[in-house]
Length: 445
Image 1 (cartoon, rainbow, N blue to C red):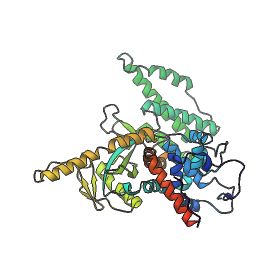
Image 2 (image 1 turned 90 degrees about the vertical axis):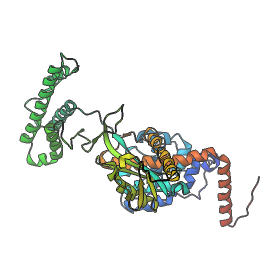
Image 3 (image 1 turned 60 degrees about the vertical axis):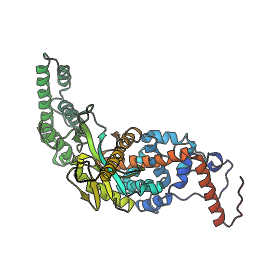
Image 4 (image 1 turned 135 degrees about the horizontal axis):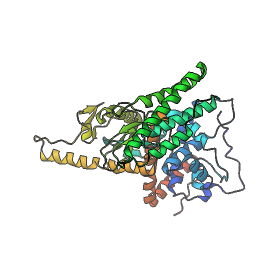
């Protein structure tokens, strides 16, 4: 149920944020530039009108999501800091200072599930609109990276021990008595697995690995025998994952690297310091000159880079409403020249080109390299380096929220650099308001 609108005509005993806050602060300006009505109209369909308790205001929840990724905070931290920061509260639609936390952190989880990927895409689209003409260039650049999932580095031994622990949890939940829990045995075998790189310990560690795998298989089969048929359906997906982990081998494809995140992919990008990354591939598209992110798409599988261009450019055209003329990419996209009306330009040497054409392409590829630090800032500053959201849905929304936060942050940095321009813009806005309200225009300089 949607919350009732507050009566803004009622006067309070305390001064409002309009009187207290600095009107040239970037968050204050961003709060007045974002089209909040678009979110109210777009998300209204996800609420019922008369049933249930009133929900939190849509502007509050959207504002918290944006602030979370702009400031690189967790759900818990952004809720706590909201109660301490006046600019955060004004950005989320408050008029007076509120000392209490706006919501429980888990309400942000439910709100993300409520608005789904379409709602997150609407926030991303608004971040592109905020950047004005800079987000409507005819040339762009595209590159891929990996957003790592919040999982431990996968090894067979770790996965087998987790299977044993989860089998014990299932048996306790269902009041099922196991033939043996192997608690002391697993502890002893764990000691044997230590220091496996030493030549004297290698054989002992290998034997311990095999024994732990055997124990995990025993417990899985025992659960399948003893659980009733209706209860077995409840744990069917978990037991299927357990059996797949126990049967997979070194060179198998579509391996499982995490029990709670079975869709994680093992991706190698040729990095010297990090040979393998476990997560999902991400395609980022930016404008060539200004660097506004106009496309951010999660690729669930480890596809060849050139095959990710079509869905990435579909998203870009859907969000911006126009077709890029040229898209500069690296040699990882070899083999494709045109996608959905956009020319795909990769570095290559052709003798028939004139010096002018070669120089023009060279400048384009030099500019293409600017997307690399852009991706670095997405990872270090806007929560793309490690994804804490669950499942493929979490992968999809984390990319778009990080890109939206970076677009908002870009404009905040520009406003911070030009305070005189801000004053001029604010004066024009006030002048327009006075004229439309049929008031006398008074300008004091």
